[in-house]
Image (cartoon, rainbow, N blue to C red; front, side, top):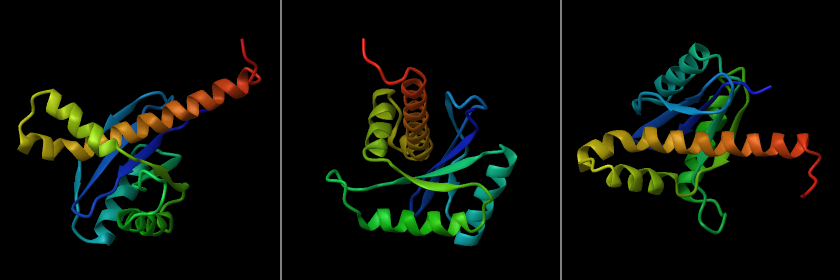
Length: 151
């Protein structure tokens, strides 16, 4: 049965957050966290995970187009490891290639100013990251339920 998932678009200055609905179908953006100190950042995320009764946290892993680790993916991995030590639910890295690019493209096409895009991009990237994860999980459940047969 699907459960709530919290997604994190990790950044060095800001952290975008999104949470799924209770059925695990849709992603909704939460307030973007302005980074302060690692301890405070993790406590904020722990409180959000508790408030929404999440069963899993996914942290965007910004790997390269070729699938290799990047400097930022190393930061995200270290953050996920520290976060796992403070949460009772699993924390896993999730491929987030191009989510920030897509978020910027969406916000630009909506006609938002540069300042408004800057304020919204991390939240939108977290929503895209989480929706991708939820869609993948739904597809896997569907395949498993249909026996994987083809038409």
